[in-house]
Length: 115
Length: 350
Image (tube, rainbow over all chains, first blue to last red; front, side, top):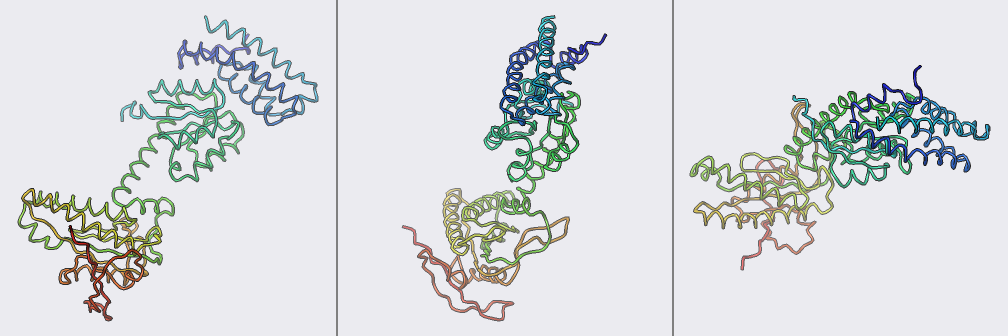
């Protein structure tokens, strides 16, 4: 079954072009930046700041796709495209789904970078 | 061309996202380029105005100043207008791509950027930059910075506009016997030194040398860019030219070579300034009666006993206390009316 948490082909391509050592550092950077982005999304939702919400979702989408985190990328893209309103109407549920998926991505990336 | 033909270019990466910034910088470094990074548009513009870069890689979605705003600022900045910009963005929608291209971006790459595509686009961007730089260098070499700026701002079009300005003609007295008495190499060296000194004196007073021929030159003050005190500037430049020649002569004599003398004619008034020639080969020049008078005055220095001659219009606009000798109306070849002619008295050397 194809793994949508981290698409192995994308991740291997990244290692091949940028170098394994560099990708290890890049994963570390992502793992230290991403929790801040998730918090930012929560904060933007609380402040009803649609522009900031869209921009953070956009960044998270971009980074997810870089590492082959297709599921996370799709969730972030939906947030970017649909904006803040549906998330607010759903009581923040889509952010929970995003946070859970990020937890999976972080675990797999941590495993892959030392592989 | 070798594959690494564009290696070693200086690139600026602008992205607010650290992962994107690091990855893009890494890919570019692997291609052999030097990379600097900025995390938003405002910082990027500061860096671009401070240091020289060959190419800009620009994200669109950024806080403080986004990529569209950066493109607008670059487009309106004469110094930075020609910098190739490649947009790298994960912003979706064809309208965004179109907007970037309309604002002058070379290309739009979707993130995550494919390294092979990136390399090709960077190569094309740098090649364009190289050609533009080469073109600008040629324009700089064969035209003055003012003409180059005028060309860059208004584009090239044959034809002129009426301007108020001052024209100066200058040449070396007795240059032909001088050339016959020395080797051609010495003559070329003499001319090059002479032109360097004259160009400096003219441009430091806001004038441009529009034509050079043999040992003569024509300079314009007040075109293509207006110059408020064009009469004063031209006369001060002429005085400095004479002083430069005196200094140069000290060197000449001590090297056992002949001293040289120059004659300068200056006239002011309305003239038509613009590009004449053909679309393939054109030159920036001024034409009109003012130009003819200046040329006649220059020729008259041979007999007037003054190295600098000016007309009445130039004289009436002078502010600094410059002592003049009134030579009265002189009738020149090709001119129906006599021209009031004044000789500039130069301060005696102590």
